Length: 239
Image (tube, rainbow, N blue to C red; front, side, top):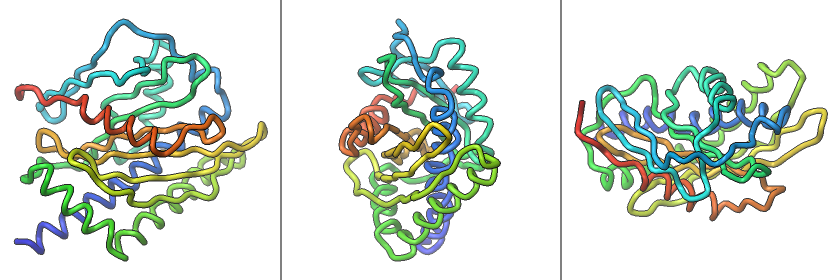
């Protein structure tokens, strides 16, 4: 039984690692090409509901983050469509009009309700990502994600220097930390990310927080944001 659980976890975590890179990079290319699209205005609503296979959740917006306006919603839908492996449950932006930081919550399309509690999952995740195989898997996923974006960009932009690694855990999250460089005709930016992987309501959720290094967004801040966002996801009664 232990061996079977370990195999299932490896497969699931491989997908989650790819989520972080592949979901981030298309969005980064859009921001690099058209930063004016990433200028949300504060919205009065302070939470958003979503469901996964009938399981209801409520997401409380983290401090300083807002729901997208109508234009940004259209952009977010287009971005979500670029990720064939995962469903985007939530996509919020920093409320400041000159700040391009954002948070997304994703779940795999090929998913099943998992039998573990979050504490068990976090222990298994740490064992996996701390192993030589797990570290190599993350680096391979980051490199392949960048290559995939470059192929799709057809020379309009370039992704380089993509790295991803395990950054420890707490009582809520197993953290992945990544960095990549996005370059187009207007120059290059370095994007940092922190992803919280957490099990809620039986489903493995990935909560990704992104920010620009040039704007001084540090990994510790991104980790706090991904944690706050994860803590703000409340499981509701099943529909």
